[in-house]
Image 1 (cartoon, rainbow, N blue to C red):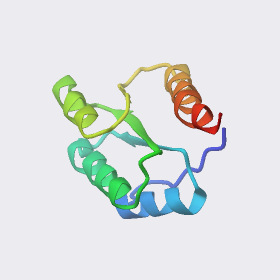
Image 2: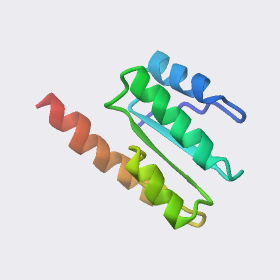
Image 3: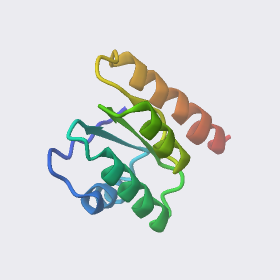
Length: 106
């Protein structure tokens, strides 16, 4: 697994453009600012516009359960809260990749 860290204060447009340029399989956002209901939907919308239907959008932060549900309904993958062992998102991403990308290659 290769990770490309874009750093802080990236716009949704910059994130999606980097995804295209790097041919990424996953976008994982960490949002602790409370902007999750703005950033995740904007990134998701841009992904759809750019045809990135086969890219996983996941991440984490301090996100209330009812808002997690809303984000899942627009196509955001599993979201992880504070204190989640790093092994959980890694396992989730590996399993997603196996079922979505490797399965498609067979």
